[in-house]
Each structure stands twice: as C-alpha cells, then as structure tokens.
Image (cartoon, rainbow, N blue to C red):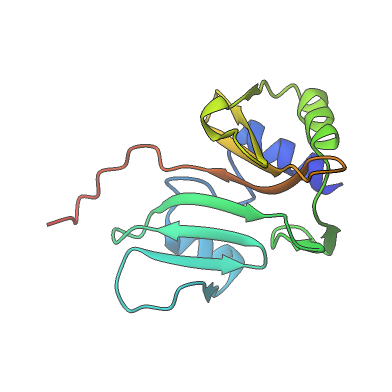
Length: 155
C-alpha cells in the first residue's frame, strides 16, 4: 500500500484503523499503545501523536479531530508497518482518490497564496497542499475536523 492509497482510504472511510472522530480514547490507546504528547499539558483537551498521526482528544476522552502530517521526508502512520515517502504530489493524491471512488472538490476557502486544498464532501476530510513557485503541488497534511461535538463534561 502506498501513502496516497492509505490516505484515500482514510478520506473514504474517515478511519485509520481504530482512529476516527468520536472514537473512545481508551479504545485507541488499547489498540495503539501510549502516545506522545504533541503539546504537553495536564489539562484537557489534549493533542497526542503516533508518528505523523495527530489526535485531538476532548475532556470527555473522545477523539475530536484526526490529522496526518505529510510534509516530512518520511511519514509514519502507526496502524501500518514501515515508513512512507512524504510529500506526495497533488496529481498522485487525486489519482488515488479517484481510484478509491472518493468524491472530492477544490476547497476555495482554503486555497490562497501558495496553498491549495481539496475537500471530501462526505466527511469534510481536508487535503492541504503547498504550491511551490516552480514544480508540483505537494501534500502538506490531511485531516478530519470535529463534527460539532458538544462535550457533556463542559462547564
């Protein structure tokens, strides 16, 4: 499996193994082990990481957002063995989305300057690309946003 195939599957299913918006944090850590804290704090909500996968967790211990950084030389996604080459081209990402049957559209609200974005209407997955002055647009990150969660533990 290539990184673009993995990310197309992520965009189509809104899941990376046990990780998805609304997943129980206990289920994620049971499957993947203890993460690193991206922004160490004792307070919730918190941002955790597994390789290049970042997971934002609410105080009610539910996953709120899922994000994969792809701008590095190699990309590590914990549910899949090995490393992937980073920074796939926009053409490769679009081809993988099309092969997977995942509908997408240009996100004009996140397309400006040296940035271009594609959205998956079915689940609001966002693919964000950097556009160099010369050469092909390269994938910087892909993520699933919060789905409007209202935390029952909020005061």
